[in-house]
Length: 382
Image 1 (cartoon, helix red, strand yellow):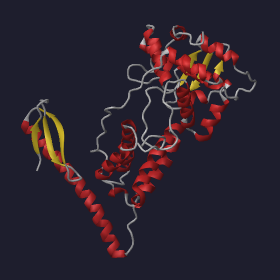
Image 2 (cartoon, one colour):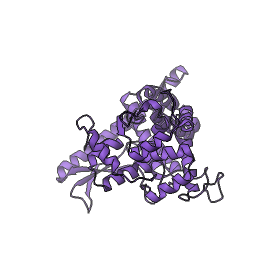
Image 3 (cartoon, helix red, strand yellow):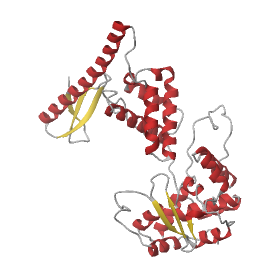
Image 4 (cartoon, one colour):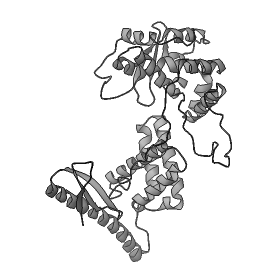
């Protein structure tokens, strides 16, 4: 039976009711009146009961059909739904996003093992919690939460498609990120240490990353067609958001571009090795590992072991998230421009962040403002 209670730190009444998996659940009613809160609690429990009934009915119908015909009732297995879901998403998402989805789906199906051939509706919140616990012992909290969010999205689509009566991930919370290292920008001194040990291609990628604030995958795919040397600009569409970016070449970056081997072929990549890597795998994993090794060479990160040690360390063990990575150059560019007094709107336009505060559809940042912002950044090549 549903009930209500109050917590010391809240003015609202909380509904206490039995969830679809049999567990007791508490949910804020956002009500300060006890009677109205009790009515909401009763409504919550009734809804949970209807979900339980629907799940049980689905199982009973399957069993009755089998007893009557000896055949299995046509159904959707976990694996078949996930495969169909991925096929549906492939033309709708960027290659990098689809690769992310595929990896999360593969990990969950591998964890399920033979159970992945069972009906999708047999997956319960208990299964999701067990998977969450398994992942938490293997990877970082952020990675675990990404997996939970992915599963919530897939099962919500299955519910919307009418394949399952309810979403088993709805009641599964994200785990706390206590103890996880936070990302930070590079210092100018650290960038100079990286440039000192980098080869020509990585030196160019680092400088492009600093003075454009763009992601590693987008920079690796750059060709000469992306450069407008007459107007001293770089033009690209970001792979993650599809946003069109026009970024002036800051003086240090322009000097570097002028030293690159020229080409009459506009399709020729600026960074051939990095281009081949991302085109082959459609991922930046190899490049990210190379950059980590570069940071290790510069004394900015510990050298990684290739095999799992007795203490669980190594590439097969749980990853320790580094405070800095190539993506930190994006943070560095943002921080340097803001510290120079450049407005948040201009910085956001250059970096390409999307938010409710500024939209490219309604706010236009002129070329002079962007050049002023980029010219305010320090010269790491000087």
